Length: 252
Image (tube, rainbow, N blue to C red; front, side, top):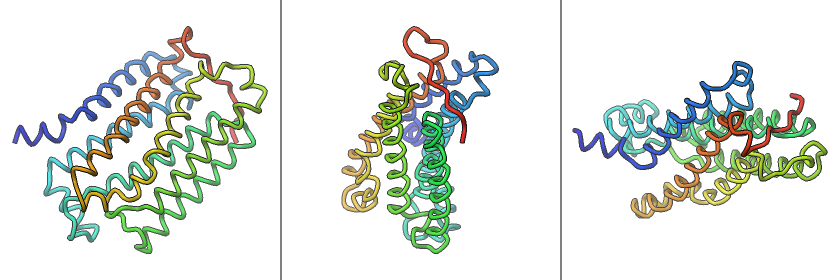
């Protein structure tokens, strides 16, 4: 029992992101009251906490096979009871996509923010339709939903860089000292490098589980960097010597 628990929860990736959440929580609690209420800081903290939650939930489904099997059966999946794709489809491919789009939105210039609003609406509607019609069941790989979300994040990242080189407020800053620059850059790398892998991973897993696990390590390493930047964003008001305060744009 103990060895099975350690196999599920003792993974280096889980331990690393759990540590990052503890550090992020520490710095978030040290923020001023008005900073905690600012989406520039609470949204990165929410994304960090939510990611750590669903990753640990994924570990629990691997630890408690009967629970995972029962959820799959409830969803109509009796062929692949070992899969926990339903969890990652909801949490990673859908909810995390929406949260990251809103995070990107906080750094965009006003005329670009409305585009993100419409992108989120379209993403939610298309995702619901594809699942309700069983074109992409919740318990199987969802390449269309992932592709749509990934392309929206890549597009949003592109809008950020356009604003970075054309907006007068951004031109007054050194991009290297802006954490938004580093976060968007790593999001761009993450979704570009894991694009094909995320779409065909279930087929790779059927051919070779070890190969699929090996390829997924790329996404995990990038995930560590992405979460570390979230921690830096949360802590940035306490690190003025290293990072500049982000320019503030009106909401749309």
